[in-house]
Length: 381
Image (cartoon, rainbow, N blue to C red; front, side, top):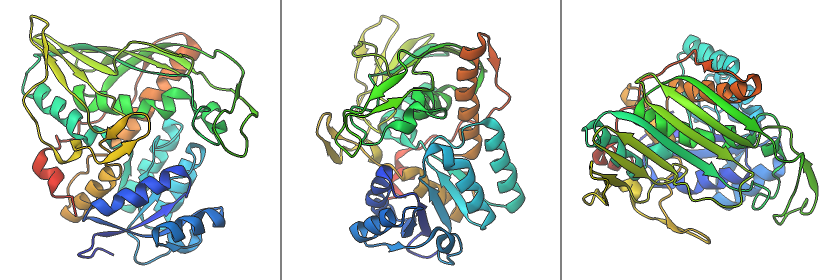
């Protein structure tokens, strides 16, 4: 039910990430979270009390007349089933990443959405951050010439150091590629374009992990049943080639998060898991320099972090932009097609490692439109 207060939003899944959506959705004028639900009723009631929203059963939320979009924040293994239920209930879907754990499931959701005339959007939305849009616009302007190659690295020693219940990260459907990979691969797609084929080497350093984070299972051992160390090559349809390193088996390294190399220079980008950070360009002489001040609503620091200091955190902007796009009858930027292409790329990377061969991607997508300052400002409450 569209109103002057924005589209009505419901959430299924009241785990850790739900608090981020509930807190940050208040920044945006195009959405209004009305209700939450979870298979664990106690979790839904806790979020209801914390954020003063209604707690419903999943069935009642699916059938609520004042809900336009339902956000799927369940564990990755449940994404397909829950998104399918949402579409069958006649609601638009916005899913946490990854959209699905297989290309077949993603295409099934695509077919159902097309048949029903409904929208599917998917995180990540961090590529809409000011830093990454600054890089996108300057690349499009030709600042570094034609993009020919790049590197991207996300490597640490795993999720058990901070997450109170990290077991699902180490099961099939988890691992660094499907968990953190969406941020990096989606940003590469929006910067360079669709991917043609991939190759990779994949390994698992150990068969178990010990949970170190405070919580009910601290000190317990969990099994590892997915690749935790991946080195991939991505060939883009443009001809550009990117090296991607993804690992939960690395204690320390000195690789930067993302670098794009062109015929006339290079650009160094901050972590695409976040919205802001410094963007540096080089000329052909190799000298790095911070470009002119580039103000963007979603690069302004707005949140403190115990380890990383002050950050720019605008998660839910993809949902808010999707709601605006539905209202304006235009394409939304966190699109189904791009999310499906990212799933194709990630699952193909894992398959390439298992089968020791290049894997051609069967999907493609258009790059989302750049997200400039005026478009970003129009979403804010």
